[in-house]
Amino acid sequence: MPRVKRAVIHLKKRRKLYKKVKGYKWGRKNKIRLARPAMLKAGRYAYRDRRNKKRAFKRLWNIKINAMVREQDLSYSKFINLVHKANITLDKKILAHLAEFHPNIFNKILNEIKK
Image 1 (cartoon, helix red, strand yellow):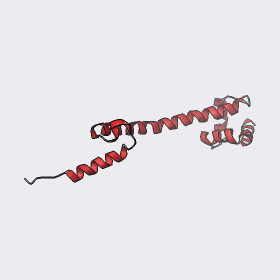
Image 2: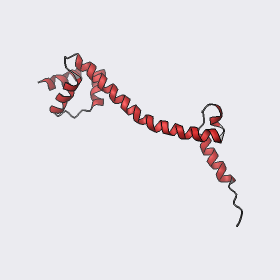
Image 3: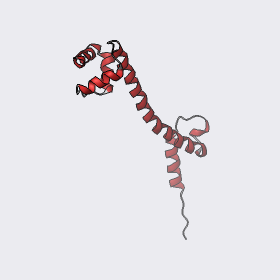
Image 4: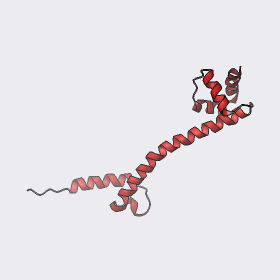
């Protein structure tokens, strides 16, 4: 069988790995043995935390809405129930934004729901 030389492929693979781990601390930025598992683990954390970020923001939206609704002597759960009954299609993200930055508009929505 003919001899197969893999230097070019090996260098390409290594360069690609080093590009991904650029900026990592200690030997994880320039040693294959340390860089590879660091890159794989970082990828797993990134995947997991993209979902956790969404979860954290959803909780924050609930808190913002609840804070605004409590000023009007209403609980969060009752407010959401009234929103659904009134067929208001604004999602919680938009409602939280309105509660934080445009309280007068949010209060108008609240008054419409209470009727």
